[in-house]
Length: 262
Image 1: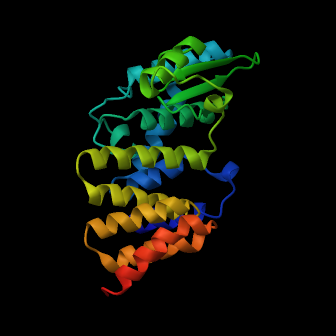
Image 2 (image 1 turned 60 degrees about the horizontal axis):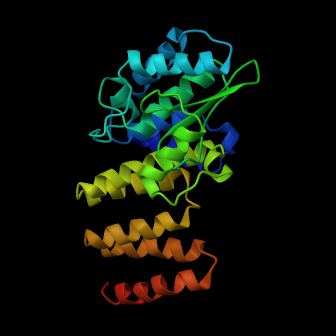
């Protein structure tokens, strides 16, 4: 039920990051649009059980790539943000959804697996019992080394971009979910679907209400949709949660104008 999913996500707002189950959270986000969470959950469990056992980082990276390939989970640039439930049922995956599936399967098998802050692609780092680490792109299963990552970064951000340690930091689980939702939001905005983008933002705010900038985004989207009361409520949350006065001033001025219209 969608209300159950909303309640689950709201509970994550006060959860420690280490206590957030990535797969369960992604299933709850998908359930906001409908679908059978239990059936999808069993699918994830079956994927983990069927994934080839491995010990070294290289073997585990290959095993995850094979799992993604066998099941049609490589990213599709035309993916319509169906969500994890629909992807597990056969809909095209985005790179972020592929990453969530791979991480969930790896962690179910007890393998260290993390998504990196690298912004040009959904990149995972897998650890092995041997202490080694291997990096793969979740959307394609390709193994990546430093030159590959540098090339991807330059292709996305320009030739002046350089790979740095900041690009290779593990993302907390909550941030993986935020990134997945942000990618869905951007794809919907490119299609002109402001309502769909707003739904992605408001779903994110259920589990990350402290992300002040998202309240402002939600307010501006409500305004675009001519829902002034909801715009005011969201922008007030932004003002209340943003500590820097300089950042608040333009929004405070906008609020004065909007309240005069109520």
